[in-house]
Image (tube, rainbow, N blue to C red):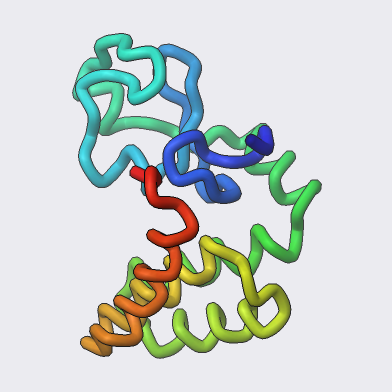
Length: 138
């Protein structure tokens, strides 16, 4: 695993946050379900701490320095998805996939954009491809 990858989604970290136990994840990966325990070490986390997680600015800087183009594009897509700008997110993901056709995170983002636009068969096509590549992916 690349040190700049989130241990949950296995993609380049975008908005990394560090839990009180010291483990770091994408905000999106832990923010969606507000875990009561760290997904890696199982240390109990206080909900108050989880809700007030701050971005790990040092790691954000390292990621941006090491992989600037990828970071900018993927974080831009995530911003568009957060604001329900699915058409724009899809356009950016498609541009990225034109450059790197096998990028799995871009396929996830494209599937999300297609799902948001109710283009379910397109979304399922990407997700099916990813599930065949990573059958044990959680």
